[in-house]
Length: 442
Image (cartoon, rainbow, N blue to C red):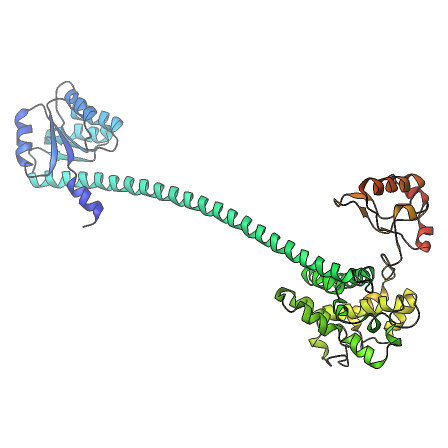
């Protein structure tokens, strides 16, 4: 037997018998003395209503013919006031019409004829009580369901709060790791830039061109980020070389010096080895001198060379040609592109090289020998890139044509903040195309 069934078995249900004849009530009491119920007796309809108001009654058995209030009238009120009570009427054969009326008015569940059969009476009461028990069990289950639903709702709410909290913690941790990684990256670039023989602006030019080629090749954002940074520190390995091995044009180096120059990739891999999360960056730097046709430093086949290394090779050699680091003279952007084109699909991957060759809007220097402090500016110069303050707030937009007024304001800003801007200026040919009407106040 279940716990619920045990509780129901222990519970005693209440049955109210109503009849104006005391001997009938006594007969009912004798017939049911073994039946496990609380028995209430009433000799009138009014007394029955009083007992109903004072007790929880589960079954009402009423005689049909009673003075002042008939059984039909009583059970009609019971149906209205206590709709869940099981209602039974006792009637004589001659009262069949009244019984039918009572069934309709009082919504009576069963009727028994006098004289009743005790077993039929017991069966009727058991039927009524079983219906009450089912109703009670249904209410219990509904209540339990509501409680469980509330608990589930509370649990879900707690879980949601926990998920939100954990998500914030994870995001915070990831942001902290990202900031730490960015700090490490900045430290590496600072270490390179502080070397008087390694030009940080040259590295920035390589990095920005490489990132632009990667973006136009529609590589994933994260891969673009890796390529940008790997290109920024592509000369990291030069820290392990003497300046005589990497500062002269490559064509002027002797065989041993060229071997040492190319060995910078191994030096960089050694420097980055402890930082496991930088392995993709290390691979790009390591294979930057690998040729597309497999004839480079490691004789790697094309599919083994990372996209980043292929792009870095193009960006790096383009700027080495423009700045005279590859040959003995500086080449113009167009001359540099034509020189790279000679090695299309042999030294350089045509997929990425063609992006550079076909684009007329990339390849002009933005940082090398092209940045000025405020005092070095002249009216009519055109700003090549957005100018921000230390809080990354825009001061002047790209394309601004400098006037005496805006130059004076920038000079005042430098004096007030004890720092000098690095203001990138567009080449003279591009400045001529700008309209003087584009001038804006700082």
